[in-house]
Image (cartoon, rainbow, N blue to C red; front, side, top):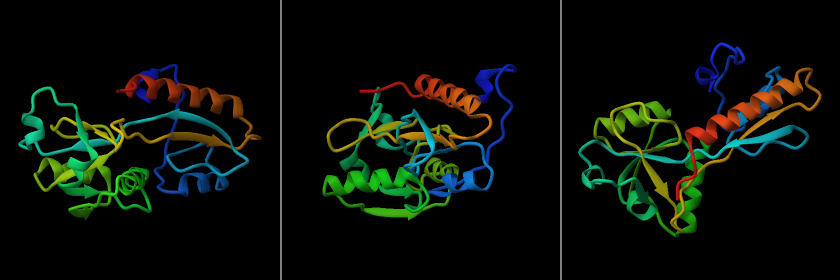
Length: 190
C-alpha cells in the first residue's frame, strides 16, 4: 500500500508482530495494530480486508499442469504433504485447522515452518505444498483454497487504535487507505 500511495502518502514504519502481540504493542506506544486476531474491546477498529489463503504447490505439481486451474479444494489439499505455519502465531493456520475440523478431515503429513517466505521457498523447492496468506514470492503460481462449502477461505484483517490517540483521524484515514488497497489487491473471488 505504501508504494501505491506515492510521495503524497503517509511516511510509515512497521514492526511485525504475530498472534495477539499486535494489540499488545498498542500499550507500548504503537499507533496502530493490524491483525487477523480479533481485537480487544475498547479500541477503534476498521476491517481492512479479506485476503485469501493461498496454496503454493511446486511448479511440477499436477495442479499446475491442469491449465486454467485457479483453486484447490480443502479435501485434496489435506491429502498432500503440507508446509504449514505454527497455529499459535498465524491466523492462516487457525483458519485452516478450523476448516479441516468442520469438514471432519485430517492432515496427511505436516511440516511446520517458522515464516511464510520459508514455507513458499520450501514449496518452490519441491518439499511439499504451502498454505499462506502472503503474496507470491517465488516463481510458483498461487491457487486459492476453497473450504468445505466451496467458498474461498479468507482471513479478516482488522486495524485497531486507541480512540483517544492524538492522531485518531489520521489513523482512520490510513485504515481507509489500507481497506482500499486490500479491496483492489484481493477482489472477491467466487
